[in-house]
Figure 1: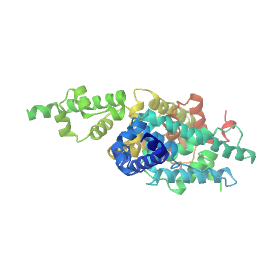
Figure 2: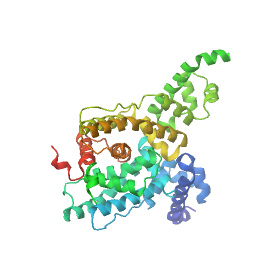
Figure 3: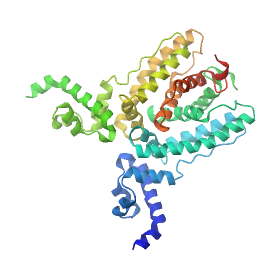
Figure 4: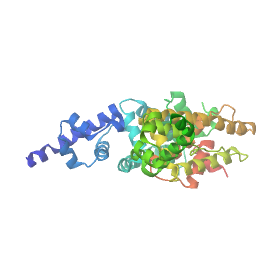
Length: 195
Length: 195
């Protein structure tokens, strides 16, 4: 029986991850329970507890294995175009009912849930390699200095969108997103000068 | 006895609010319970439930009545000085152990806790009047166009700081904060040109 369980391991893990993320989306973090995951995945509660001691541990594994928040870095030929496209994708991710609760859980993790906070930190640290590549292309085109720090840029771009959505409770319009990009690129007063 | 309770009402409410915020700071949102609030405040659990149906309702009332997150808008004589001072205060608020869990709870509310999200939205909407006054002064000094939207400015400034702290799990240095301000004011490439 143990051999059987091992053999079924990857498929069971996948079922547990899927159930955890679906329930997070449907019921929110507070509504997510190991019991619910067991019932949705069809995997025995005891088996789940043998692998993961808490719902945060299940969720951390599910988020790490999932590509639910995958965000391809655009390559439009200009930094402004790349940032506009990226801003739209971030805004979609944090407002689309299919992904917003997952993004929200990652955001909320930093305040209160150490186990998930580690996943969030690794997730966003991994993304920096891609974001650096986008800035390297811009620097090769002569659009920005090579010294521009992708972390500071993404703090501003993602932070502004997340703040608008999760704190103010409003979805940014496309004009709002373009204004964020232009402020970051050209400054508060520089925006008007750019066509 | 009912008369007695009414007379003690405001003082009891204050004790309940204080206990809720202190426990939030000590134990985090997930560790906060009505039982804990009752025990800390010395007010009977049944009495608390008569006024508020849930811990979110207690917390919403406590946050509304509290000045824990009060943030005076600086008036240094220049927009750059004002924004630098404001960025330092925001960073302090979200990293100081005495206030960070309260700020974190407001931030996390948007993702998952509708009752607290309303408080967060009202709190940040109220602040916009002060933030507009800061921009009006800058516009009178000729530093920015009158059309600059305080909401977009604060989304960038607060969003970048919150993202760095709550998502990346890092405290920004003073140089990081100044760089955020200069990017918002002068753009990604304009920063180097400013003394």
